[in-house]
Image: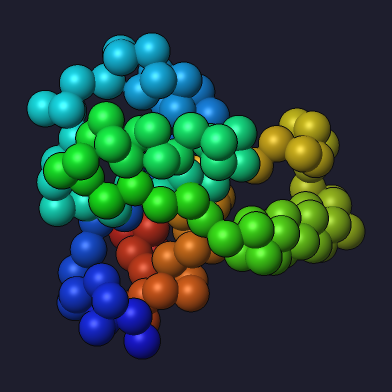
Length: 121
């Protein structure tokens, strides 16, 4: 579905607030970032700094995840947690905590025809 925008195979690195701070504090060298990957920030802490980071790392494609997408992911995550509790699983960490990995999996479900996670399809 997104092949005309991303190609048939793309690397999308999801970045959180901590990584944003490392980039702002010059702790991330440009050599650590590959020019062929998309850098996607999901935490809105990054919003005021995005333009500055794009200028600092011009060889990379830096984007901020759309608020509607993040809100959808949080709703899906919340429902998944509720379903797992109902099945007798849990307790879980704070309901507000959603890792970059979960953001990545939910984003992949929208972008990819198939997903292979730890050998499971």
